[in-house]
Length: 341
View 1 (cartoon, rainbow, N blue to C red):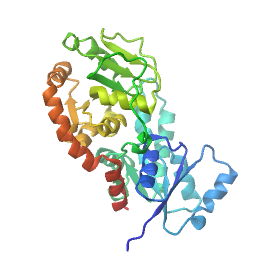
View 2: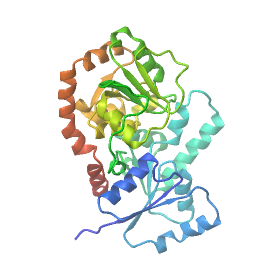
View 3: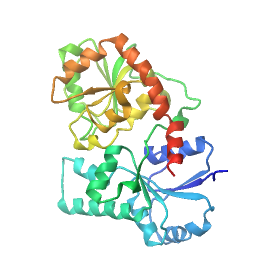
View 4: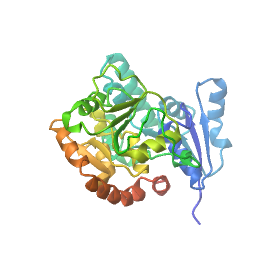
């Protein structure tokens, strides 16, 4: 009879932090024992606990260090813990390089060394895409056998007993084009504003749900901006009533390797995502789950042609359901994670 493992998570972010939290919650939902410890600062008591972790843990327990917790991975190795998984997802180096507003060569080197040391400290590394796997192998000299792809997925448990609720900002609009995400250098929010102003989209309503003000941008006439954090019931209503979901639409090189988490939200609600052609998100979603666009071409015309065909969108969404359920559901992601152990 195969051994059923238990799991111990250590992270500098709480369990709501999307990637590692999704893995922890997914394991529990699928019948595994999993504990999550938040380490918001490293002091003597934390060091003592980590030193004794191996001897105090159950025999079949697997230790997992959460995304963004490079310093914990390095500390574990210094303390003599050799066997643990680092759920890296992506590299801090890529995140730093994608910030176009400022650059310090000294900080870049520090960030690169932090990534490098944490990768060599870990016995296994989880990444979010095949492209990320190749990137880390090439630029950090990590053997590909040490790298495993584990999709981020969506925390389906948080929607239990949740019912759709219309956000107060919404009127009677249905079948709108949705963008939900952070405003940052990768979001391509300027491209989305440009789409809303384009005359060919004059009959379409855009709904923008974001964390920072976008009032400095020039928007079209039919745009609803929700500039706050929405709750799960509002999120459910938004996705159930949108036509398509816009992913990050920028020329950021990081999108070749990383996958915006909101595509998993859209996939959960069986909505098609508009993504950059040949990006990691495009390759994950496959033929039916995505509408790929090329920013170097007439992407507005391409997109309008595809989404104005409502029957075609419905057929594509129907075909995407089987693919989404077979690869992107929490159950399938956990099954693959367990089989890769």
